[in-house]
Image (tube, rainbow over the protein chains, first blue to last red):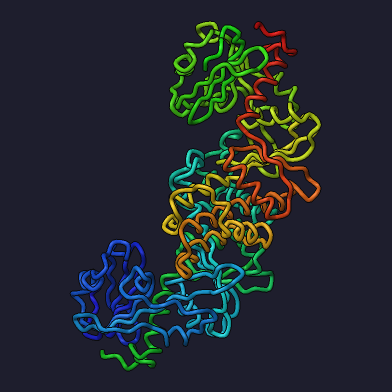
Length: 319
Length: 319
């Protein structure tokens, strides 16, 4: 990176199922170096996490590490038990799992959050809570709902720097299954690209989210459009994308996750965030988009400061 | 079969995507012989249908054949174009596609039915219409809704011996994808068996159909139950089954497919029909189950009589 790394203070790690992303930080939280590997927890055997981590960051100064994501799950390095909702940012920091590796490096793992509810079986998140912390770090008085779209899309109710409740929707996984593994795959294009510019994306969002077309039925129309109307496969993929996103928004509204008075944030990757922003815009709902990667780092830095892995106030930097 | 086949009058064929089932009938519609092969239309190349058919029934007397199912689709032997709704039983019979094979055997193919609708992209069925004809044959004054559960579940509004409208739900396909191809597969058992006896089937039906738990979100709870509560995998498969069936019933009700005053029939296989009957019973809704295979044959016989492939009245049989 061309930066001096003698000022290194901490390694911040986002360690998920399919990959691991590490950033070397100085005491002010500035990024000195970055590294990424495909040693997600799905690829690392029990007992192999320290070696996998050292393979990625072994060339960096031996500073402490803070981690979030599936690395804290039962299938990860060590289990950082789910914290029940409501969970304040301070609770999360206080519940960080801390240990020293065999080689003596201090490691902190951020726990996930769970909902226990007799009415709907409860819910879990792991990794997203750190993005929420990052969001609250930048917007401490936020009161509203953060939507974290993805394979397992999360709708998170936030207020007073606390995760009050959340609900998961299987939207991304359903979209992948339908577009790649179901009989609908013959009716849609293989690539994705920017689907939101197709008028069919808008049509599908409106049909599911405004007109209440039932999701389980609406998806069959992807096949019907190909069969009876020879709809272009790229437009049909956009239509399917609109159906699942519109279906999620409709379901979240019906479940009371938001109403016209709710302040909404979308926390995600650029492409997925844009698709949700476009869907909300089509419905006349305002929702500000935020970069998920940046918030994950901000969340790790916030927690690191809270637990003393980084200084709470920024020291004067060496020239 | 040990029956004399000199009285053979017609071969009735249910020819779908993955298999073909033929029955040799006498003039009264009695079954003289049965044969089945895996030469569904997915396995037969263009131009190969006559040979595939002759492989299965070549040993039988050379009588005419009547067919229903995907054999009439664009990917089948010859395309029998979809008939638009409302479609009376008489319209279906009048629209049967008739031709002689290269070897001179008369063949009749029953067309599918379509819905054309600006509001929901329309819908299609092919094969199920013949079961509906069989149902109406036995119950000519039926007015209500027939549910044909399966990979693509159909809700068919019927009155005055006419298919007035119908709607497809992707329930069976979604269940297979979720239980076998999604991350939920780690949380459910592989087999199926009778899932309806598990209390978790009932719980899931109630939660989706009565309490309105949104389907896209409810399915994530299958994972949460395994993770937080160590729910048994067989019970969890029953729970997932209840979620998709309950989700379908809730969606159909919300879409106005039925209400408390609607007379319901379930037309399906024994196991699937039982699951839907149990779900409706749990919701306090009466729905009589009928055997789908029997109705498919009755439908083919009804249409064959209407178009003169079988005598309209049963002749005296030879001793």
